[in-house]
Amino acid sequence: MSAQKPEKIEKPEELIRAEQLSDECKLDEALTLLNNYE
Image 1 (cartoon, rainbow, N blue to C red):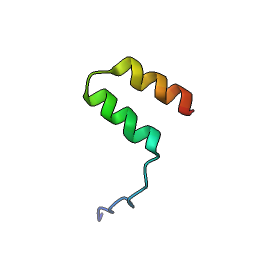
Image 2: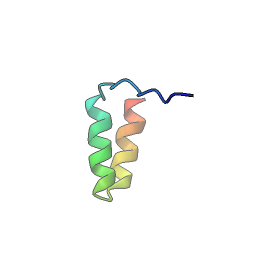
Image 3: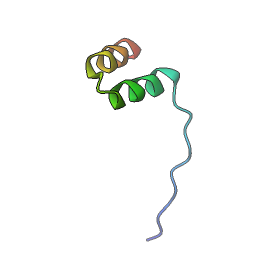
């Protein structure tokens, strides 16, 4: 079996922001942002 590289997918700005918030331990804000995104 050969491993396939996943194609690079452009992340929406909301997901990038949520990742930044989670990295800063601002989980409530990240969760709110993701809930609003859905």
